[in-house]
Image (tube, rainbow, N blue to C red; front, side, top):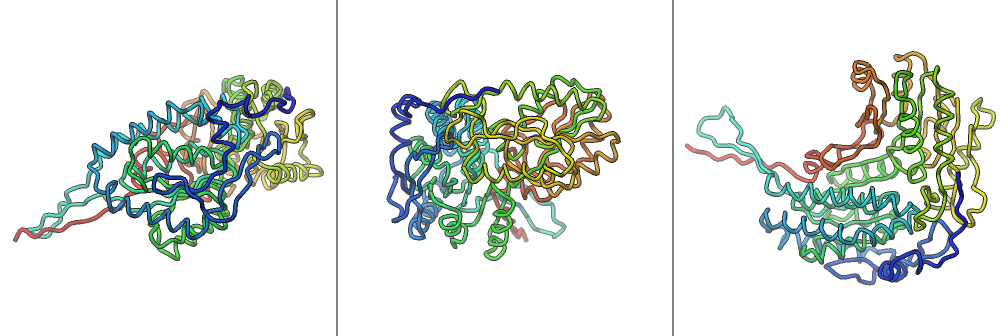
Length: 502
């Protein structure tokens, strides 16, 4: 593991002129095709690699949120809502083209605010965002209802799929642009309009995305952005009477709160929440490849990924071999500023979040588990919120470091011997987002996949993702699916029409 010294170059040298100017400007909300002032309060955004201020964004107040929702409602009742499907398809393709054309600029915003290696954002996040819009751009002309063969004489009955109206899309700080695309693309394809609230830690790419929506030709008010905290801006948004659908990605605690709010106001809601994902390696697997994936998925974006393979479960006979291989991959990581192209691992999102992850590591002492490597703040990383890639070997299933989502570069490694015991342990937690299996026994792979309580199971791979393949968890990992036809369906309602032919 190598630590890059704190960047001595200014942001002007790390970013394009255009990106730097946008990133360091003060920002308000984006409503009706324009950025506006959004109240008297502002939030300072920090560079997590240095702890230094980047700029300020507005804490959008109740009046601003109301203005944004009403703008979206007018667009839904007006030009966007009445637009023919083929035209909507054309505009979404144009939107995708503009995201792709501006991908290097957009990547710099997420690398700066989120601390993610810019080369990774360019090669992972941006292609996924473009793919979302291109996939869903093909759907508007293919949304169909059905003729229902009822047993009532002289009746013709059919169904229609209709958009819901104004969607409140609330996105997390770890995948700002990609999560915005995952919500915007299907919601718009179905004919809805959107008010997007990004995390107050990472607002820049969402604001720029809204500008590109206007540039692509989407009518004013179709895509709006309100910046601010969940406690203020988010609360005003989800409780607004004109919002018909809430789409949220984030923590389980906030998801439960929003679910209760949706129940009180009878709004539709979909939730993509946390995960503590078992990543299982059998002795008959390609061990070198499995260990490489185990390290990559555990430390990718400093472990700040809901589907991180953070709970490695290894057949006991190969435990030492896997630990050694994972450690070698961890040593090869280059820790540094997200905008430094030499970096392969960035900081955690904030000082408070790093402190939280470190508190989990403090519980290892006296638990019977051991820290195999890592566990400290890297030397020479300056004032940024960095933490070494870490592995904890042998914790009990009930230990918080195993049972809870840490959202940091902490991999737990546990041995197993019996498959039935493995299944019980893997399914024993409250989450059910993803799981990974490494084995060359096809029957074992199929049988185990069907027994694991997870929304997605990867076999001899991990973290594959495509706009056409549904993604979402079971149990406390959420409600509803992103991507594929399922991702579109959750933004539509079904209407039944009865016609008498008597």
